[in-house]
Amino acid sequence: MFEPVAHLPATERERWTAYAPSRPHRDHVEAALFADSVRRLAGRPPVPVPPTESSDGLLLELDGALYVCPQQPRLRVWTDLARAGDVLPLVQTLPVALREQAAADLAAYARAGGGLRLVTLSTAWQVPVAWFVPFAAEERELRLGRRGPGDERVLRYRTPMSSARRRCARGLRAARAHLQDEDVPAQIEQVSRWLEQFDPRSVVELDYAALVDLLDDAHLLGDDSAADVADGLAALTEGDALSAAAAYRRWTQRWHRVALLSRAS
Image (cartoon, rainbow, N blue to C red; front, top):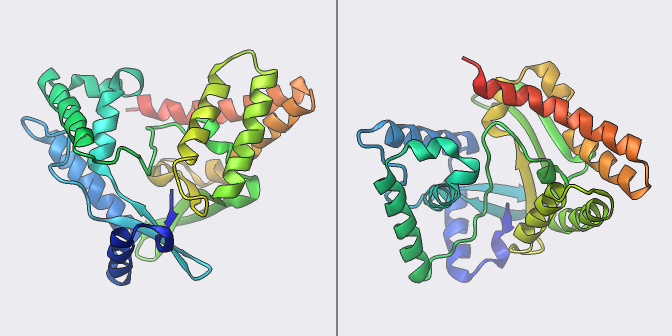
């Protein structure tokens, strides 16, 4: 999530405005956070939670306006540990005492007035189907260059907050009305509630990040996930169950192939 710097509280606005002229490249910020997490988890004993929060952020300039997505590795790890039983089973290999300490630290942070709002949501190996609902097919940005100075390999979507909220509301109505399975409507509602936490002038981004380095050009070129999800929801609205099922099957088959990578050796 990228929020407009101009509409942040004064302290934050001044901080990011001063940070902008000498900010590191996005790849450098993300690589540094990844390298730090590897060092901490490879230690003996492992240190799952960063000792301090990152002062870095990803900045975006659009139409003369500056937007920021603060990096929150400490808060993200605390949150991941809290939900490890549901979505991060590998985290359970960490000593129980470390996980209990992380939970206690998060609770103490909240009691002290620390904000618990996550600016970035992340998953490993998969992008949940509901995460595509805020986006349109034409908002896809695809670059197939190899990673290097000034040469990015990217697949991401960006959209204004107003569009994201409108598509989620429309998708949620369709899913609730036509799907017996409650999982997808619940996921879309969760995304909608997350979006409501941010400034309505924000920019919403879905980034495949390092996953693009594991997928070949043909896969990325053929990845029409946002279009499949939009087509499926539109078909549901029109009562066309066959077309909706076909769109969902295309999405499922694509992401099943990606999921297999998590078990490759």
